[in-house]
Length: 403
Image: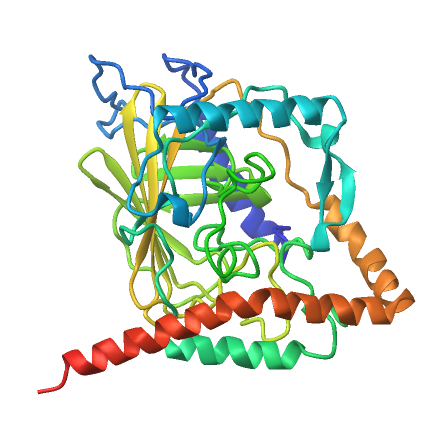
């Protein structure tokens, strides 16, 4: 499914709940967002966490993250979590130059195998770029890197690679990744580069294309609150979650978005995503980002902590013993921008592109096969690195359990 309603009754119920939340949450709030270029500005010295009329911490508003930050920590920043002032200034200068090039039409977006796609002026805003001091979005493990896979996950991925060899990645609809098919799924826990990371070793976005490859917090969010519920609208893929706060059971139904349950931990909103299930992509490629496992044993825990009038510390933790040897945690700094207008994410272009994608592959089947082989070759160094980590983790565990 691509987010469209299949049953009229279900749609009416959901839209009715959302409408109620919008009415309740429509009261204007003080402290409109101040645009800044440094996401680590010191918070206001005197600030008190506001409360809703029923006493919960008030997180309502539109929250964005536009800062460029590597998902994993580049080698040159090993051992430190933050950049120096000079490094932040250099990043900002490169980002501003890139913005100027985009707005002047001097840059183009590039797609698979570095092929020019379309002029960047079509999807560039005039806002000044924000720069993060963090050297990686991953804050745990402390080295800022994804933890190793399990041997079970390595074997599953090797089976997938064997199934794709010699057929290309546009042979059938099932070959095409969920993003290109407009299928909405849980945005957290997905990583880029075919779902297995960002290369054989973390490569810095600060070398080369000028802040061009960065981790994302999942797009702007609008948070609405009513007694006993929080609703989060997420612009990416047009997702929204209506989250009960009474710790009710999650039930047994599994779906691509999972089931959401929330609670308050002091002033922090905690949202747990469980009951997640993906039809594991034995064939389907995931170059736009995907979760590498089935989701059956996956749990994602989000934490929203408001630190001042215009800032939220947002982090999520991914736990899946079938995929990773240990959990990992990602941190983003969100800033408030209630003037931001959400735009519908209808995925129209990708829906229309599928026919062209297959026609192109049929027109030049040799090129399609070469693209598939090229994809496997790009994944191989990272897969070998993950396999080595899995073997080392398994050996370490085995030695620690010996009498």
